[in-house]
Length: 275
Image 1: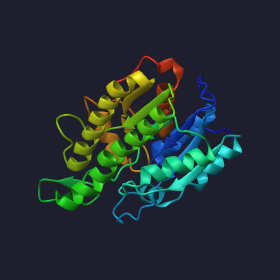
Image 2: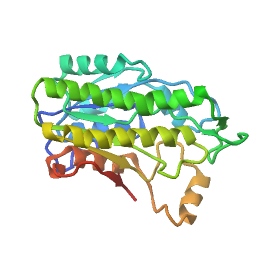
Image 3: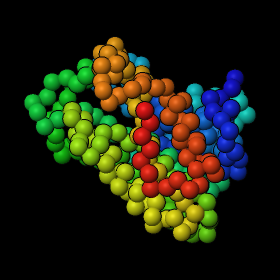
Image 4: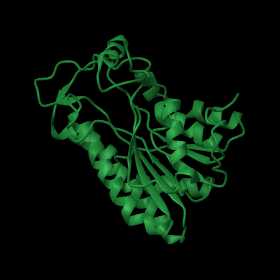
């Protein structure tokens, strides 16, 4: 069995990647892609129990562990371990990096992919485009998303930087995932705002950590089929003047692998829009 990414023209042998939210979707594809390039990979994940109105197989994918991802990587000769961690816990980053160092070695590639996503709105509610019930913005909806996407991502960057500087390393990669935009994300307002915060943290890291050989970039995927894309979404993309493709998770993972490689050594402080 060949791991997706094994044919990518990047040599990441000797590097260690920590990928959050990697039990399914873009995170899982990224773990396989980086492992296929020779990196050792820590798959971080959190099993969730989502409401029944979440589309399948997206709901089932979010509820499973990382066993399938680890098995696929190891079957192709790659090196990977997994750890379940809740990024809402401020101590989780230190535990993840401790585990990675003990099992694989010091982390020099960080992929901030995990999300506490939900659909919230300033209106009275209703359903979003995939039939998920929207909730009105509240402290709870804000905290669910910001604690993972914004604060969790920032703490992961901080832990990465502290250890990198402490061991006087001179090569590192930070890559985050975003969605929405500066004009907001209607019907997913806290998610869009939290991703905007992660973008800002990552851009700050790009400039502050450049003297230590670290690049930091954000990948903005197009509509990506992680199990939630239905016929209505396909028709919406087809009719849209700004959306071009619905892509597979492996397409996004290929860009992340590129940004992790030495081919991208001069690329930093960018939000890379994929179309």
